[in-house]
Length: 132
Image 1 (cartoon, helix red, strand yellow):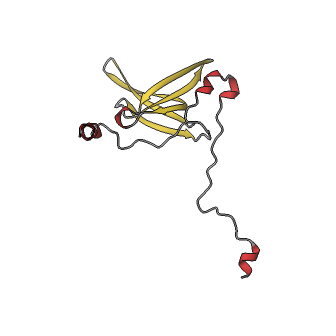
Image 2 (cartoon, helix red, strand yellow):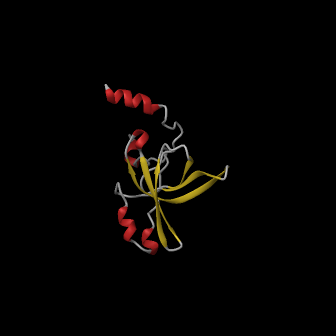
Image 3 (cartoon, helix red, strand yellow):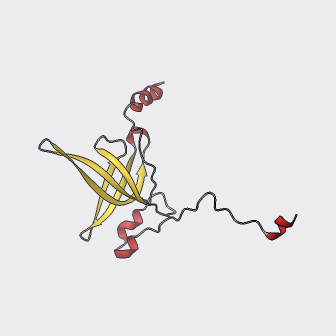
């Protein structure tokens, strides 16, 4: 009963147009920053190393290397200060959390890119099947 009531209240704060991304993807997070009454957009681009939570409380962690230092931000997915999330590159990883990237240096911090096949590209039929 109480859980249904919470879900009902939280549902109006959920964003409808959240882009689909996974751990390992390189994303650009467009943040709305207000300074002295003026609003501007700032893009934070990096690799998604973790996702946690669900509903309004869902968060994701983005990591990038800036001037030789690792920088991580934990963003609430449904925050009103996030304008949009743009997927730049799909990553091919086998872990739900990529915390091991924190210990890596240089090119070792790169994540392999996922190569997606077209749905129409199916294997050709063997010659024996065509003869029947």
